[in-house]
Figure (cartoon, helix red, strand yellow):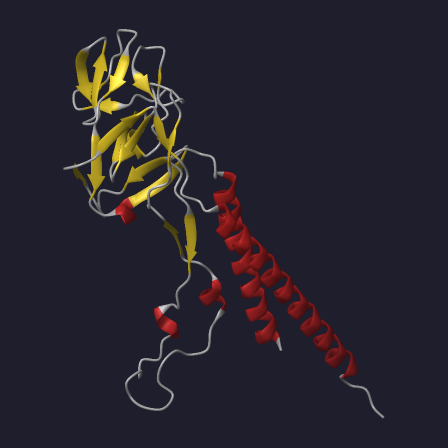
Length: 250
């Protein structure tokens, strides 16, 4: 009985974690450059039958509490819809790659091309972190600002710099750190020049979250959580009846 309650509890916990991830995705449906997350479940190695190729009984053993807990969160890096804004400081990458951002903690990466000019006169994110060009921070000294299809930054008709757009060799090496920024784990991957990554001025890449799909999954998760709750309640009542009957005589 206790084992059944334990497994039902693990199932409810898994649904709770899925709910957190889905809710965060839905909350960022209008965030430019946001990439949705998905919970990844797997059966731990210790739950696998070591005699998988030795006849009857081979294969996967009964699930345990740890089976239901998502051990990792997978980020979907597929491109979101490109949306026209008409703002000359907005830029969308046409293809793969990431803009490079200089933060106090080091270089970070983003697909969010909603730029502005910080108090130092440099092209930056709306949080004030400078956007990097091939020559470093991009100083904007002029009124007419343009990005051409190759990523060149043109101020008052003169090329000032070129946006530093890079490709990450292994996307799983990226870790979300908030504000649509990613940090690179250099032990797992590296950046390299992007052979092709056109830029569209006056456009932004929207979130790649599918609202209908997320809402459907939220309903599924809610129903699943409620089912586990009912299972736990039922098994708890059964256990109480068994305990109350111990030691009684006819």
